Image 1 (cartoon, rainbow, N blue to C red):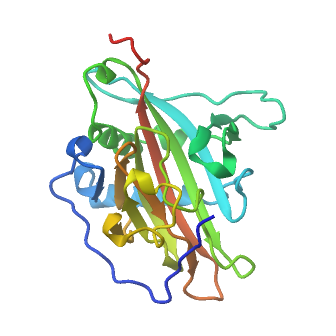
Image 2 (spheres, one colour):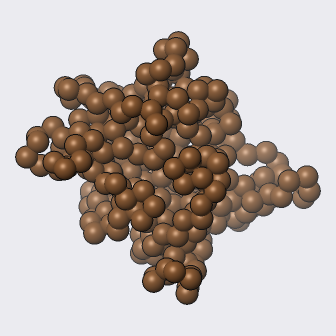
Length: 280
């Protein structure tokens, strides 16, 4: 497992690109601010920020990676050829053996060595959040920034919705993500939206080449680091083209050691449901 690097001093905030919206058609990754493009008033954005932050209160422990990690997960579908696109929530499974609640399966295959080939069952994201108009706009914006070929646009698009929280505490002074090194997600596209940082030091994001997956960003030649940046602002986002890069978020520690630290993100993994070898 790659070592965790932490900062001893809070870095300066960095400006994010807000105009125009970048696109993954000719990029391995993009880093941007979606808020100016949500067609929402300042009051609506404030209410949306409160809703999202409140959605992380009482988030259940991740039963598979429970060392300071908390998670819910759902799946949804977008139909690209609809004149008015909407995000349709996929219902959770009922009566899963060994699981005492409705649950949604998630399996990264070989892309997460901590849970390799394991079908993980998570409590679903609340329907009220998935169906919120601004949440739907955020998903549809990310879908529009992906690089789709003609055949993929003729099939439904699957969107995984992850609410992820990591924490650092007195007993566990470093909070880390899984997997804790440069990696690919195993989905065609992934988007990470920052919701909040509370009492955090660290959490730097790294983008590198695909051949560096499995390595610590501090162990690879720094010329192979495409970018490194911190995210501080509500909904600040980066998106990755999984075949073109690897990425990693460093662990967090506590700025004020009398308080816990938290980093809250929403991740959308986005991929076509087009079958291999059978164009439509």
